[in-house]
Image (cartoon, rainbow, N blue to C red):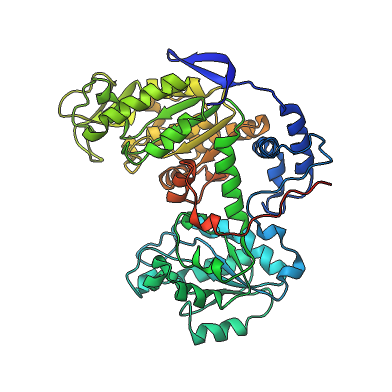
Length: 509
């Protein structure tokens, strides 16, 4: 965690918060100056008002040791963005856009959640508006060869509706017929290629396949954050054959939020980490322990931590081979002055099923034959108190078994906590469904927005939970990546990002 001079205590565990002011005044002045200019790479005019970006740019200025005079220094992001390209760069050009359109479909091939499609629209619209010929590529599912149920055809109507133009669909992603369709594209149009994973060469990142994809276009835009952690032909291989290769608005926005959130947060910075296994979140927890002020843990992995502390956990999920690791993480948190909070009470059940008998007990009193499935009301209040002074919150992973409505409190209430909403008694929570709780959250978020608190949801399960409750649109940022979000939070390099062109070097003005 950053150096600090002020301290406070949550649940008996001392924690410190950053108060270093060295060079902060001048660099924040520089950052504010830079943010007055159009952030074209983001594609969102409102982004400049977010204090997260001021902090992020200020840190960039400090790390580069540029002039403290805000009029003398200009710094750019690490990777070139589609927003850096001029209309002349795009007009009439064939642009290969790798998006992540991997949306869920029901048995009738209807889209059940179009979040990823909507997230890709700003980049596509920008290209269309500048007269580009868009060649849109994506994967869907994990097909083994050509599999009709994984065709991208069901996406065409929704894409066309959101873009306001008729999207043309190709029956393949390479080959003579695709080349003919590309050659016939007028300016400002979109051609959707068939699922790139119909070819095994895609995931193997075979150069010849990547070269065939690249041959369709003049330049490349990667807007598929959800697959940026994979070195596939359409995410990494094509960059060897297409220049420029730049980030789309969504990819850039993901990087700015997820990287900025953990490197230069507005403090106090809290992280909520959930999930079923400690082993799947080791990297995230260790990375966040070095950066956050408060770390809240939930989900099935808490029972491994309980057992590591000598508590009885009944039939709850425990990773026996991770007990020493859990102990070491608790010790690291204490040594770093991070307030690490585990639930003090839990909802337990006599079986893992929607019709299970359930009750609330202290974390230290789980009886034999019963399993923990969710956090309890006392824990919710404790978490609420701990987060009440935060300025930045990032949440990764479900806090409970949200697939079963009966055990969904832990996953839904942390969202309310993020928005500083009042704590509802456990029994009363289930009486409130539909509009009541959603309206309360929306009202509280409106208040929160005015206070400058940044709330970020990173990770597939967390996003699914937010969508289930219906408050996704009011969060500061909802990440579209699952594994990519995890790896970025762990501090890993993403192949799909590192392969893109570097942004222009800082230029003094």
